[in-house]
Image 1: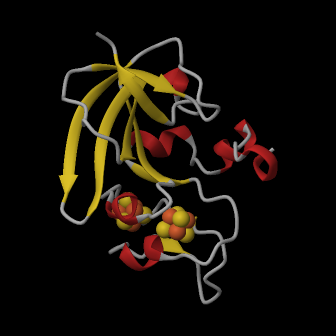
Image 2: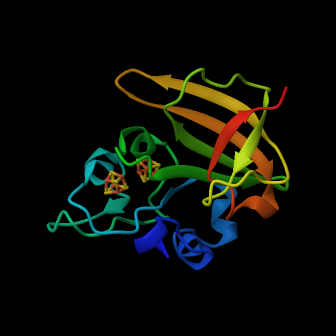
Length: 159
Ligand code: SF4
Ligand code: SF4
């Protein structure tokens, strides 16, 4: 339960995703589950795709018709709560915020981690690393599509 352990249930995770057909284009998945006074995701989106509204405590809502997957919101979210997700050729692609060093390198195979901090039984592959001045680095990762609702981040490189 998220109030006790901070871990979202599968149902909560799925509630943040659009239908799979929509994910043939990249979309922002915002896993911001609790009301907090925060809104840089809303104010930074150049396409007005995120709505929080006049009450800054409200939970952000994404308009997937407006979201282009540009990734700006993921770079500015102080809670690292946003990833950009796309499905292509049986793989799920995630652009995740990543603040640890050393950064992964393109082509490397890494441990994939779920929301409980457990290592998944399939690896993921580093597809891109985008360093951003004064904003969070974004790492692009691919993994088999069945892990769409499980993958959340990377742990360490396979030697
Ligand atoms: S990915 Fe880009 S278009 Fe989509 S919600 Fe984030 S900032 Fe807006
Ligand atoms: S910027 Fe991040 S933490 Fe703040 S409201 Fe938006 S998604 Fe939530």
